[in-house]
Image 1 (cartoon, rainbow, N blue to C red):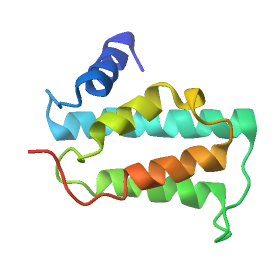
Image 2 (cartoon, rainbow, N blue to C red):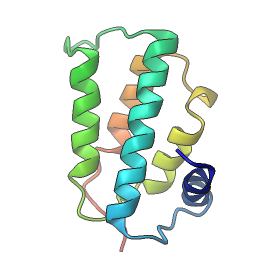
Image 3 (spheres, rainbow, N blue to C red):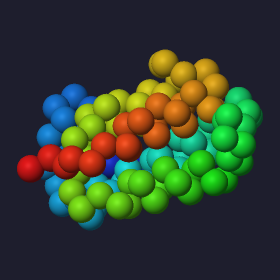
Image 4 (tube, one colour):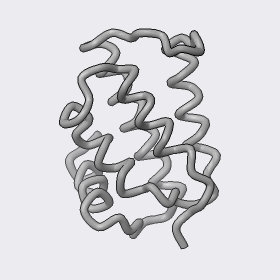
Length: 111
C-alpha cells in the first residue's frame, strides 16, 4: 500500500471521519485487512478458535463482513487504528482476528 494511502488510514484513525467515498475506502481497508491478517499469520501462526474455524475461513468471513457495509461502519476509527498498529495490542493471530470480528460486527454506519 503506497504511503499516500497509508496517510488516508492514519487520518481515519486520528479523526474517525471518512473524507472519501466508501467504495474507495472499502478497497483500501480490504487490502490493508488482508495484508495485516496474512502478516500476523506468517509471524505468529494461527490457533483455531473454539468453533474450529480454519484461518482461511476466518479471513474470508472478515473480508465479507467489511464488504457487506453500504457505508463506512460506525467503528471505522477503531478499525483503522487496529490495521495501522496491530502489534501494539495483539501478539497472536487469533486475538487479532477476534478483535477485527468485533469491530466489523456492528450494523450501523456513519452518516
